[in-house]
Image 1: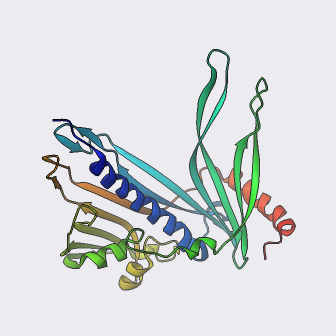
Image 2: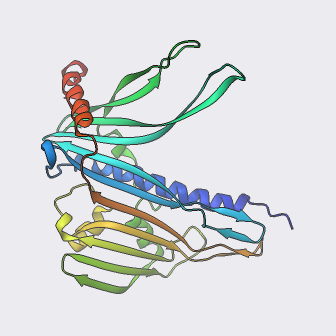
Length: 283
């Protein structure tokens, strides 16, 4: 039997969309809550991670045995300056002596930077300036954006683990507290289809309360402690039309303090912003 993967692919695509939107919400919600503690050389760093399982499809199996895709956002703060390092994949066709053109792919970063209290911030990104036959070169481009523009996005059940849990009817079945950490396990009552989670695992740490970047302000407020890990679990689901069952799926979010990998580079980006700020009138 030849399997039509459209419904299955739609489900897993939706899972990826959920996770991507949650990460965007983490970015947007934390724009005005980023007064982070200082570390080496006056710069602090918090890392936000999203972990998505890779999927594999065969005739009789829908599995997650190919590892994970991990996306990382780094949030830097120095005094009243805030900067997000946002990864993206750059692709372009470049001249190739044999085939005429070849697809070029490279991992790059954008940097959105603003000063606390300003209306606008600056988005820095990098683009190729190479013409055929020239040595490869990259230039930095700058775009002025409203700091609160991303906050206009309304949170809903697809980009807030708290809302997702509440909609599904949460039932707390386990709560463990040990020293600085708290663990909570929820099951849900209203599982309608594959888009609804089956359980939610939450991990809190009180010593992270000074970090104002948040995975969920609602959960932080309820427990007066910082949510630093969330795991949404979708149990194995039987697809009647395909006569096959999917593996259990876990979507994960992590918040961690981190060392500065390249403080000189980050300081240079912040200094560049300080020089650009008066010219772009960001107040």
